[in-house]
Length: 146
Length: 186
Image 1: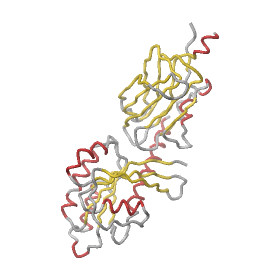
Image 2: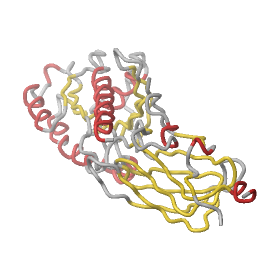
Image 3: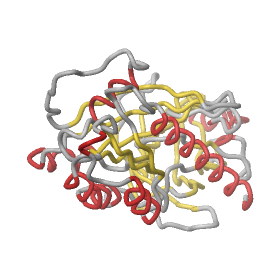
Image 4: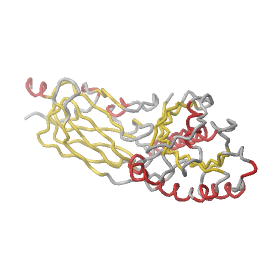
């Protein structure tokens, strides 16, 4: 058994390959820096989305998303080399939590992905923020050498 | 530097001049539509507005919406999650002013946001002798409904930019406030 760790970190090679909004003061890279204090903001109309790419195929058991004012969130995964052929793997209506972050867990037993796509369909306000995405899992290439 | 994107619903009764205002704004005053062409459903007009004293801008997606009831069912779906609202009436047509409450309620019903920046525009001020809605009356109604009030004459090319620029600024201000609020508790 390999140890599970957060594979959704830029220090583990994860990157944001697409984001539909960009304020240079609150860039999408803030989602992967391991801190809840830094965040990415959306800058207008919905839907909005971002895609996280792993350095290789990852096995993910659980995703945790820290956000603010997100209402409907859809998650899709891709096992392709490029960010194409996404399949839906989760969707949730979140609760409004004015004045504090939303922390939402998505159980995805046996999920394999090279890319994860997060689609924010709707919101509780004009703008939302994503603070962190954590993925409990392991990288396939790491497990094979372990 | 940030570029915001706002979905601006342009609503009001038919023939009050919504499309003319939108086209004038899009073309910086170069295009005045002389003949009436009924808008079918919604026309989307895009224009980027720079926010003074910043490096920021707001891209307005103006949903120029038909004032004809027959299209309302389609428009309702296109209006989902609006960012800002530009409500127009004709100062020489009292009925178009009375309809503003209905249009306002319809657009606000499409959002969960606590704040939807909006303006009320009294158009056709060039029809001086035919005016039936007094400025004061419209101003009061706008204030009660948390809308900023402007008067325009698309025909005389007066003031046609101000309502849209004001909306862009309000949307930008709202973004700043929201980001500051998030920063205050993380």
